[in-house]
Amino acid sequence: MLKQYETVFIMTPVLSDEQMKETVKKFENILLEKGAEIIHQENWGLRRFEYQIQKKSTGFYHLFEFKAEPHVVAEFELQFRRDEKIMRYLTVALDKHAIAYSEKRRNLRKAKEQNN
Amino acid sequence: MAQQTDIKYLTPIAVDIKQKKYCRFKKSGIKYIDYKDGEFLKRFVNEQGRILPRRLTGTSLKFQKKVAQAVKRARHLSLLPFVADNLKTNQ
Image: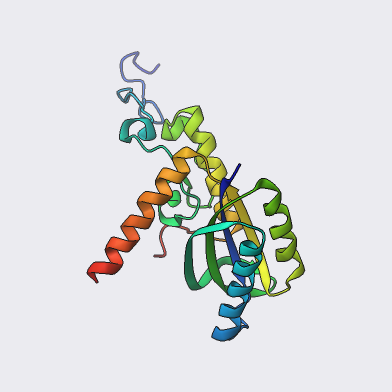
């Protein structure tokens, strides 16, 4: 049964733009190979931290929203642990209220992008 | 001997009218508290970055737990600090 998940992860700011995109692409492929269905992606770009992580104070944030089998998440997170470019990650299962909220949020963002 | 009437209290007795507290989530019908939205979560955190207790905010237990979990997740992703000195003033 496909459950819906949301993962936010932080990449070190040392990366150049291509490397950052390449890493995101790599994780996207990992997900697709495991049969997950990516619903939505968001790149928050470079953001300042509220406290230092690994002696750095900024990082690239990226969000994945996907539907997957429950066992896929553990393997996916294993890849995060292996990759040293990823400083931190957080995967959250979405219940029905969360799914409704993220849908609303997505339409809001799309509407905003359209009119500016 | 001080007159009985003119007893001076050190601090004026705080007799404030007891305002009925309400859970703002139930009232406004919010169902999900997003951990990614730092600005919204800042309202439930005090100057030092600590989570505000229910007796001050008046939120119901169900939503206070959701707020607490969202704040802790935001702290993990460093969207909110664990400890801060003037979180809300320097904007």
